[in-house]
Image 1 (cartoon, rainbow, N blue to C red):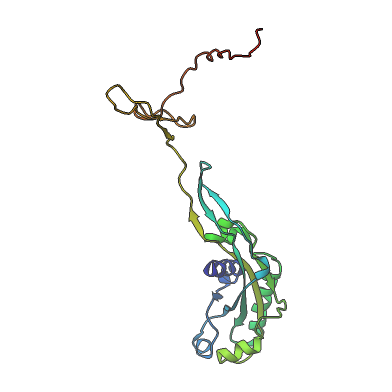
Image 2 (image 1 turned 180 degrees about the horizontal axis):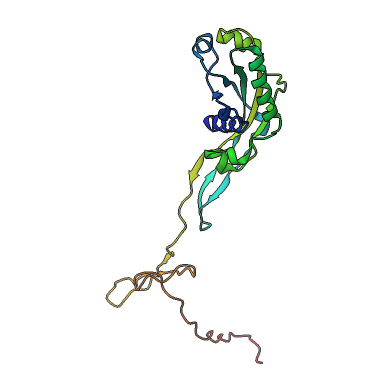
Length: 235
């Protein structure tokens, strides 16, 4: 799921016209060494924090059906996680960096969710909303200054972007549908002592495979007359 969120965020930033204007969109950690090797204008979206939203944890299991409507698996409910990115702009001059960062901000604040057309993999299959919060405040997320200190770089202007995405639950294959009837045998035997062959019950939804398969429905005769017991009244 994490790499699918990466791709959705990268595609969204690409739609802002950054790549068309020669700006690289990367997911690297903006360390001091990385900054020294950078040669082109760059927008960096660095993922630095992942936390589960336990308030949205569900229970039970959902059913997964194939194209014909048959049950093929049972899946536990998805679990939701908040992914926090540090988005920065890198160019030769601070003015250029701020211009890039303004372009990124305009793109991101226009969306409360990652558009469905940009989702791939399990995010697209689940069909759930992937929330997007730009420059908001998170009480539990590390401060930007702490992130820069851990990266060994100098503090600079940045955007905090949080994505709330579902992690698909675990799927367990379901048993295949029953296609054979139950064999019912009686205690009756032939004259030579051999048991009478069992009779297989027939499912109306399944075709007759042949003489050795399901037994066809039998025509029922009239109900036998009820023997009159002593004490029964005459009509």
